[in-house]
Length: 417
Image 1: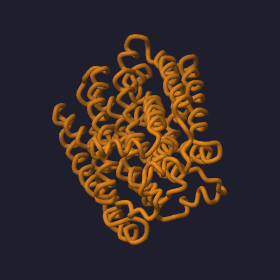
Image 2 (image 1 turned 120 degrees about the horizontal axis):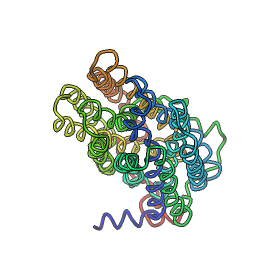
Image 3 (image 1 turned 30 degrees about the vertical axis):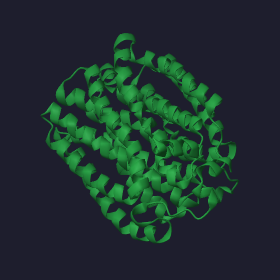
């Protein structure tokens, strides 16, 4: 309890709450087409490859929009950027409710849903910006737990689509965005760590090896999370012949595990180091994905394995973003957006790989195998680059370096800075 009180006093918890809700509701909107994919696929009689592509479009669009939003946030502030984005999301959902009535229009709607996927870097930087380095992993884990929005999407979208039609869900989703907009407007305060720098200085992480190393690892941890979470309703519906609503409920079990463990991943990384945590994560992801592919005939075993896999994804996301503010302490929003952009692009790969695997081999196995191998490749890379990381900007294992200033030692004075 004492540790929690210290954490609470160290920053501005209303801003952290607003960042969590902002990311949570945006994430739910981002994966809306994936949650409703069995309904959309049935309406337009889509092939496996078309299903995979349809699910990947919002992921890819959101990835490409993350970096521009992160840059915008550096100039107008993270709170203002979040408000602008949520206003655009409401307009996009209104378009979906009124105009979407063909497969091509669903793809166009997927691009618009990508606006919601751009929220990642801004949400995490806004939520953690009030906290000193030793608490940033936990603060980012709490803000990043907004990827539990996947749970909202897969739990509520299918029954609403069954009752009112899947197009109507877009309109209902627009109404839900009013809650995070109100909380952001009333409760959030712009953190004090904003600096006025040139565009070149903002995007400097694009030209550094560390930026690309982080991005490639994030392809596995976050790309795997968003890609598999979006595809699971289709996988359950096709593989096990469950109902569309049951497919969403089963997906919810896995994604909820990943969202909850993200907080633990950030806190654990503050304690033992992000590098150590990521090492265990990548091993677990590879093993569980391969096991998921081989357990395709057992619904119970597959679901348990997916829960284990998503727990690893969640811990990996928290661990990686414990390291980001240590490496880029004054440009966390832009660095996070760039890393998130590449990672989410990797998420677009997984649904396509699964769809192509089924269409060309009659099984989803090879989609799982390819991503499991990619996890092992990233593990080897991590063990190589961490040698330099722990010599330059992090302690052994990826922990934050010891505080050297009074402001770093006293969380209250850091808050007042």
